Image 1 (cartoon, rainbow, N blue to C red):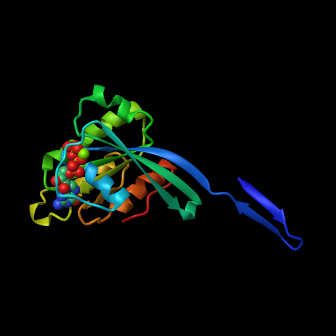
Image 2 (tube, rainbow, N blue to C red):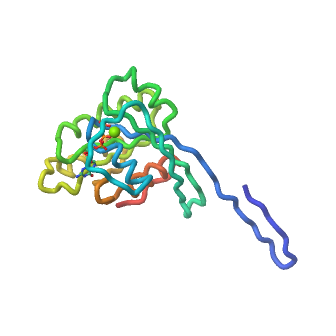
Image 3 (tube, helix red, strand yellow):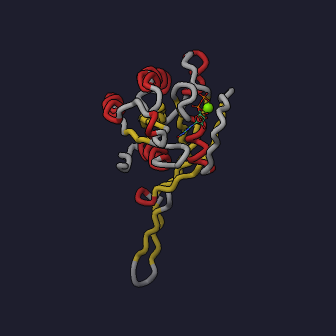
Length: 190
Ligand SMILES: Nc1nc2c(ncn2[C@@H]2O[C@H](COP(=O)(O)OP(=O)(O)OP(=O)(O)O)[C@@H](O)[C@H]2O)c(=O)[nH]1
Ligand SMILES: [Mg+2]
């Protein structure tokens, strides 16, 4: 909405900030770091303990895109990484986008990315995707080649980010990217 005021000398127009709520799902095999990425993004924290997610947890963080004069309440949906579609249907419903996560120390988690993208798009439609290759701090154990991540991401028209929930590297960038993409805007590059 735009309000205009006549001050006697000039007309001043104030464009009101736009506000949106967007649901974004975290997908990926068990243990890739979905819960840890959300914790880093929302609370700026990390724990080495692995506690399987049971049920669904929704967290909220407001993101400001000043260049777009827009605020987005990102509702991040987290569940355990099991692929049985019946269980996941209600989780995917209404998603405006998805962050699909693999673990750079486990090759099979990159192969699964394709299934996760298909499953979410089957329910939510052709929503924007961001591919995340997580645990980039574990350099000595890395088996996933960033080039392979790039090739996978290109198939979905998605950007990709090498992240570490442990150190925080690129986490904010990846979540901001999906936020912008839910508005139909391109992501900022890494
Ligand atoms: N070194 C390192 N460890 C990580 C990172 N992200 C997550 N972890 C660890 O990996 C394990 C699994 O992380 P979670 O965030 O629980 O994984 P998840 O994908 O939510 O797992 P499910 O809920 O079972 O699907 C935990 O021990 C985390 O501490 C990371 O970036 N670097
Ligand atoms: Mg979890």
